Length: 416
Image (cartoon, rainbow, N blue to C red):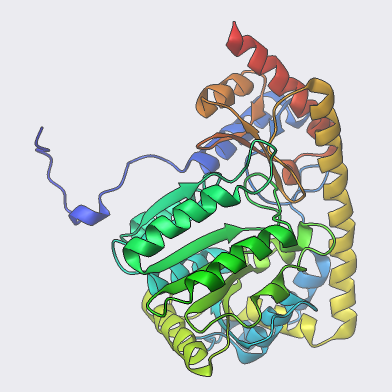
C-alpha cells in the first residue's frame, strides 16, 4: 500500500520513530528505583562501570588532570586528525607491549563509535555488506544503515561455546568473492554483549585465511578489531595483536580504540582509529581519508580529553596512579563476574561463553518476552537478537548473584 504521508526528510533518512532500546529501558529502571528504592531494583542495562552503591565510577586521576588543564587548553580547537601527543599515547594505550610490526598510524575519533563509523564508511563501498558475528553490538547495524551498507552475520559460537570458525569462513568467502572487498568486524577481547574472548589459536586460523585470500591481488581485506573493553578483559588480553605483523599490502588491520571504558571518559567522547600496514603509502592514505572524514562529520575532537590522555602517558606518576585505580575496578568487576557465573551454575541457566568484561548474555528464542518477564520482578536487562544482555559492570556483587535465580524463575514461568 502506498504511503500517503508527507515526508520532509529524504527517503534514505526515514527511520523508525522509536526510542533507543537500551536508554529507554535504563530510563524505566530509573523510574522503578524512584518508586521502589534502589535495593529493590536491579538495573543491568547501561554499559558503564558503577560503584557498589550505584554511583558512576570516574577515575580521580583522570578528572583531577582534566581540572588542572588551563582554560585555553580545553577550549581551543584540536587538530583535525587529533593532537599529535594524544595520537602517540592512543597507540601506546591500545597496544601496550604487544604492538604489531609495521606502519602504525592513528586518527582521533569521538570514542570507539567514531572509529567504527570511519571503518565502515571509508573502507567499504555503498551497498557493500559488512560482516560480524550474530551476537553483536546493535550500533554496528545502525552505522551500516546510516551509511548505506548492509550487515551480515555468522555464528559466533559452536555448540561447545568456542569461536565458530567454519561459519565465519563461509560468510567471509561468500561476500569477498562477490565484492572483492570486505570489512570484517571482531569485537574482542571481552566481547559486547557476551564477554567472550577469542583465543590466540582462533585468531591464528582467521589470519591464515586472510593471508591465503590475499594471494588474489584483486582482493581488498580489512579487519576491524573493536577493542573497547580490552582493559577489563583479564591478563594477556593483547597477546593476539602481534599476529597482525607482516600482513600483505592488500590486507589492512584497523583497531577501534575507546577511552570511554579504559579511562571512564564516557561523556568526553575520546578515542581513535588505528591502522597497521606494511605500506607507508597505505598508512598515509588511511590517515588523510579519516582526517577528511573528521572534517566532514564532526570536525574536531575534544581537545581537553585528548590532553588528559597525553599527559597521563607523559608522566609516569600519573600513569601509575591510573593503573592503580583501574586495577582496583578490574578486581571489582571480576568479583561480580565470578558471583554471577557461580550463581548461574547453581541455578542451571543457559549462558554464552563469558571470559571477562562488562557483560554476560543469556540465549533465549524470544528475548523481549524474557526481558519483560524479568521487569515484573524489577530486573532490567537488554533484549538482543538472540537473547538478553546483562551489564554486570553496573550491578554489585549481591545483585550479580541474584540475577541468575531471577532468570531461572522467569524461564520457568514462561514455560507454563
